[in-house]
Amino acid sequence: MEDSESLRRRLRDFVDTRVIPAEDALEDGARAEETRSRLRAAAKEAGLWALPLPAEPGAAGLPLADYLGLAEDEGRSDHGPEVLGSASLLNVRMLATHADPALREWILPGLVDGERHIAYAMTEPGVAGSDPHGLRTEARQGVDGGWTITGRKWFTSAAAHAEMVLVVARTETESAPRDCFSVLAVPTGATGFRIVRELDVLGVGGQYELEFDRVAVPATHLIGPRGGGLRLAGERLALGRTLRALRWVGQAQRAVERLAARLRERRLGADTLADRQLMQRLVFEAELQVRGARLLSEQAAGLVAAGQPSTVEVSMAKVAAARALSTAADSAVQAYGAEGLTAASGLPRLLRTARAARILDGAEELHISSGARRLLREYATAGNQTGRGNDLLEDTIRGSEE
Image (cartoon, rainbow, N blue to C red; front, side, top):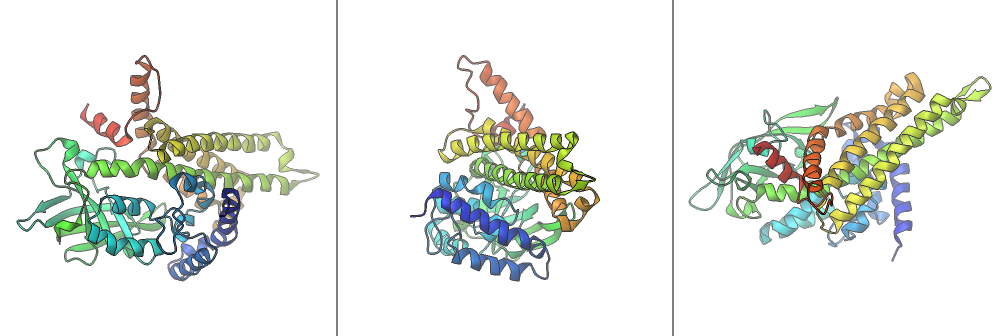
């Protein structure tokens, strides 16, 4: 069996030499699908496909803790997880644990081999993402046990190619707020399902607004227990945010490498930029933030992989990684000057990710305030142990109830 360090080196080499050079093509609508298919075939041939997915034919079945140790290298490009087959990890885990056996048997093999695609839809237009109680999409159960879903979702990734969307919808009216929602699997070919429009994130598409106009699904498309939707969402959050943090650290490291290379190579008379103290400060500050974010992300990853409470650690990792990427990318652009503002440098792509990172998976302010509330509660107890909460979604719910 290949040792972890050898696997890590091969994975990083694949991302650096195959994925990163293809980023422009992967974001070009005319070339994206052909490029993605070619790179996926190469990943399968290299034995790097679907590393953390269940050991179906073609997947590696790598334990979560081992995969989290590789996520930084895979995430050096935003396209790494998709090209390498791990982007579906959160959906696969949810379905494998909570879906009806027949639905699970139908969809999982296709997800693992990359032939099927599923999207996840929670956020809604006009509803604050930090207040899940405000979700308005409804699902009503009929006498046959099936469900009819009505509402809108947006910022749903990859919905254009999905065969099914996992939708968080309100199913209860008289339960406690946290027990009012369920997750339902909606086929995108169902009558009443419509992609309203593609949304851009700082000029780049890939996110979608969806409409559900009395879309009917059978009872077997309920994922997990009725009323358990927010709990299932909470299960995704810790792992999803930790993966994002690790991947952002990978991109921040990539930006620092670009920064350092520029400082060594750019000559100003007899000197290089690396000889200038202000430039030295740029690389030091960027490296300082990247190393701190890496340690926090690895700590959060260890707790998440072990199934331990990790609320504060995940929040700190998410905020630190977003800030590290912002500092590193901005510093690299500054060192490159006007050239750093061009798409050819690759740096605007990292800057775009960095700015979005402060909002994605919970705005920075949410993580700071909810994490601080938990820290203050815990410091008020005799044990003074931090980060022992259940999940950030619970803090979000509690904060909106206070």
